Image (cartoon, rainbow, N blue to C red; front, side, top):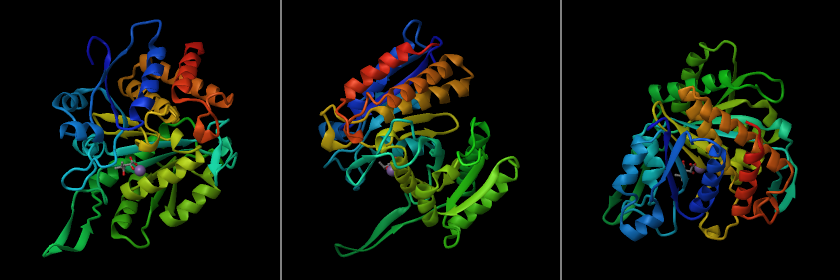
Length: 377
Ligand code: IPM
Ligand code: MN
């Protein structure tokens, strides 16, 4: 924070990242019109393409900004052929690296279907799920599990004989993300679409894995502090079918890292596709917000991809900042952005290719910026 303005560090990143970020920043500018902006925005380089040019994933300036900023906005990272010497993707520092170094322990992924949004299934655009049935938040643990860098290969001569990934579940890691999920269920204005009940569903594989049994025990211990919230359990395999058949049952879902990664991509289908999936990587002191879709190299530079995930990431960021600092200057534009997104999606004018439409990325940004200007404060 400087001179009453929150510092937002922006990393457009690779591929379609810069295209969607441009529109996100356009909307952010529109939200700030008519007064002094309660935020400053600075852009920094980084990612796989930057690595191919420079041999580094990002520079010292960007790294310092990420550590100092009140919030981080990330486009996407990853580019074909951009690989670190150890085999990791170049740009890792900006995603997995920040999750680790800033201890962003909760990956918060809302899954809400807006009226007017279609589902692309087998190449056809249909209304499969109803908006009134899809409104949950999946909270994914973000610092451990199979993502813990405790992995490696055993080689004999030049041959890999064994590859090992270690699944680590800690008391601290499980407890804080589960508590986050219960706090969220308490704070949200609505319960599950099915019955209005506030419910936290623990997704795991506790019938087989020790780490999951421990995760579930921790869930039970934390749940005692929240008697007003219903306990609910699902084995991850069964969860995938319930998610598709009965999404209305779910309110807040909590899962370990790897399972959370997988189920949130499936959940994105329910909300209209990855073009609508945003995520907040949230820690005690820092947070980073991103569209979940990745850099989509195939579409880079074509002005075709759907920028709504970025708009929703911007909304998530403003709300997190506003709630954290008790600052209406941030929650008010978050509300306006939420209403503008709903209005533009409902009238069907902003449909990009993934919705069967012809709207461009920048055209959708123009529509959203105009809609934001039209929202009463
Ligand atoms: C995500 C992505 C990342 C992950 C990749 C890009 C490392 O899939 O944010 O869901 O696995 O967490
Ligand atoms: Mn993922």
